[in-house]
Length: 207
Image 1 (tube, rainbow, N blue to C red):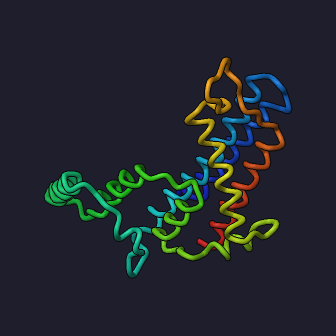
Image 2: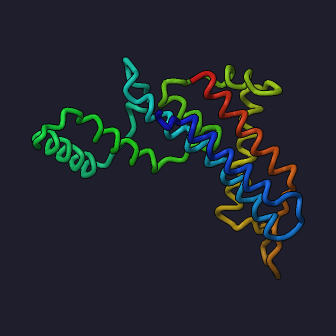
């Protein structure tokens, strides 16, 4: 059985929840870091899902979506891939599936993109042929949300994720005298994970 984009997302959400469960409401520094890590992992669930969804749908379009058709590649990289495909096609036994190499090239190119913030997930939806689906996605959330509400909630989570990943979750101060961390409660981390899990379910329902 194939390991689908949805399977990958569910697995990452489960891992996020397992990490959060280890914190178990503790106020220790390690437990608080586990909450931070759980949120980071849950954002990765959405990012991973979008990357894999684009790849899964890359060859099902009658006409390529604009965002996918316009995806840029360096010429030297494209030339390298063309040579590799040609070599594989001439080899014995003959490789009759040159699109496999092209899909590898697309995967490598997509790894340069991040699909976490609302605007970036929108771009990913467009590449997957699902542009303009935010109203339908928002309607499947509990409670239902308008696109601008989804954007505000998602971007707030990703902003927090970025403070953890890029700034160590230290408080922003002009002249810090000591290391002071932003706090995150068990309930806050759990709510963020739950929202991302519901968002992935909603996207999957319309994909």
